[in-house]
Amino acid sequence: MKLGLIAGNGRFPFLLLDAARASGNQVCVAAIKEETDAAINWRAENDSAITVHWLSLGELSKLIDTFQKEGVTKAVMAGQVKHKQIFSSIRPDWRLAKLLLNLRTRSTDMLLGAVAKVLGDEGIELISSTSFLEPLLAVEGILTDRAPDEEERKNIEYGLKVAASVAGFDIGQTVVVAAQACVAVEAMEGTDAAIERAGRLMESLEGDASTLERRLTVIKVAKPNQDMRFDVPVIGVPTIETMIRANASCLSVEAGRTLIFDRAALVERAREARIAIVATPRHTTTAV
Image 1 (cartoon, helix red, strand yellow):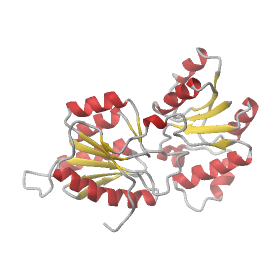
Image 2 (cartoon, rainbow, N blue to C red; image 1 turned 120 degrees about the horizontal axis):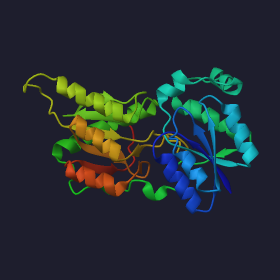
Image 3 (spheres, helix red, strand yellow; image 1 turned 60 degrees about the vertical axis):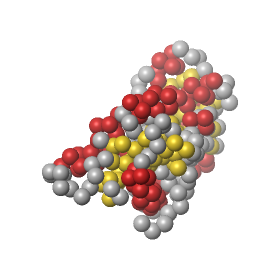
Image 4 (cartoon, rainbow, N blue to C red; image 1 turned 180 degrees about the vertical axis):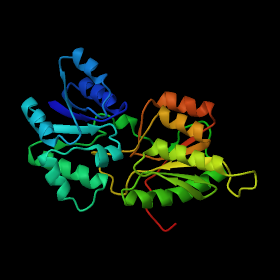
């Protein structure tokens, strides 16, 4: 099978590419000029079963034509495309412009779901972005040698309710909590930027009289009806580095629906920084 790979930024596309090749698939990479690491070209230069085609955000017709010429009938999206890129930097071709005009809302899920339908109508099935990478999904339980303490467990319990509600509106998938108070909610800026913003807010609190404990807990969830074809929650070593800068001491992710990249390095860096990481079961939204 020749697999189509729509590659965003980060390491996700490279991990999926390696896993697909290890399974014996040829891969046609649609690399996004505004997002994809140029190192993807090196993979094609050293493997005749990989082809790379560069296109800009908004070139939906070119994407379809490329996959059809390459004989691609199944494709996968891997890697982030920044939300602000999707809704501000995009220059749609006629096909995408028509699609955008017919959207009820400008949410990421609505847009990508519509793109998936267009691809399907053209004979290209978009499959789960966790395909070939299921061993990287978080398993329920404590992932570090330090478990969350009582204060962090309270933050997680509260934060899960907030995060599930926010994710249900397709706003973001991460909230940052201190002393059962919501300090930051992820929106278009992305997870790392939301954590950094929370860190700056805590630093701005004057003196030692604040009623908020300074330690932050980060809670990341999948959407209630998460479409595993796109926008699957991901954490890696950069997540931990961002938490360290923000003085965050605990990370909660959703078991079975969060990809963990470079797990050994991530756990070791968390251990060094005394950060607790826990994978919780799927959360059902309830009143906060």
